[in-house]
Length: 418
Image 1 (spheres, one colour):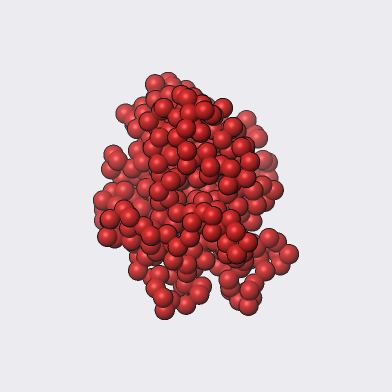
Image 2 (cartoon, rainbow, N blue to C red):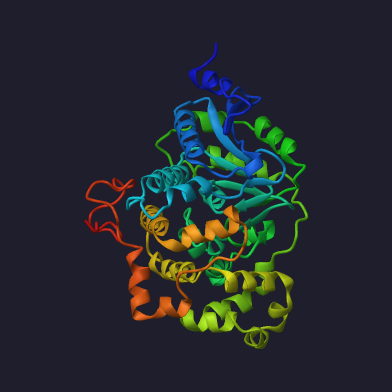
């Protein structure tokens, strides 16, 4: 007999943007497999993909046969290299209304998916092989069990396109040790699997060739205790919960040798740099090779650090100011409050010049020579600070915010400008 879920899964076609299927376990349950299926664009996340993922998550949540889900990307290059911003670029014009309807649709569906994932009752396993950036990082942060490999490379490179570290980045960057998250947000530094383990973005290091072995461990696990558990019990604290069963299966896989962590190597220099004063003080150090060498010679000489610093120097000053402001603004906010605030900032960025200019320079004309609207000195002036703070204000009329049912009227960022 075919269940409604199995029927829906069987209808997935090879050319769909997300593929869904189930794998049977030895004890008669199912593991749901979700595959981002846009390898030519490095599985960049679109509105349609967010909608498909959200709908399937909801269906599988209600299916008692499905005990865990695994999320991965098609191809061997990337899990997900960010959001599909080319169509978003096309929607950003001088005549586009504010707030931009497509930006509302894009960020609204994306951020709603992240919220759904964070509060999902069943284990969400991430196969984090290859490149993970931007929107892919939001998916990564929303999973309960994250695996990285020797090929994992992750970054929040929004400073290169004039956006800001969104996709819940404001939330997970804040939770990294020694202010390494602030450094990654400001520099877009490319990190590896060991960095993800240190930064609370992953739990397990495996080889890229281990996928079949891991699936076999999951399928051979005894899921009966989880299937018979009282749903009213805490789904993560119970030793027989599905989360605990997944953790034991993944922990049994031999730990792989993956590249050493750059964040671990340079954490002290990064911590000193990020605590050197205000944003102007941090900028003064990052703009000076001599000052960085005096701060920490090894950090200044490392090619990894040099690439990060070069990205910062070439990056968007408005992004720099937004990243710094958000890092401190969200310190005591919940995930839902952070996503709500990020939605405000994202829609403002879609209406202001730097985001469009950054995408033009990197992806459209590919001249890599963006003409940013302001310098950092401009952003730090009284007028510039007012411009930065305006990004946090709710741009929607009353009851029109795409995430409006999440927060009360008194919440930070919920006050409408109209």
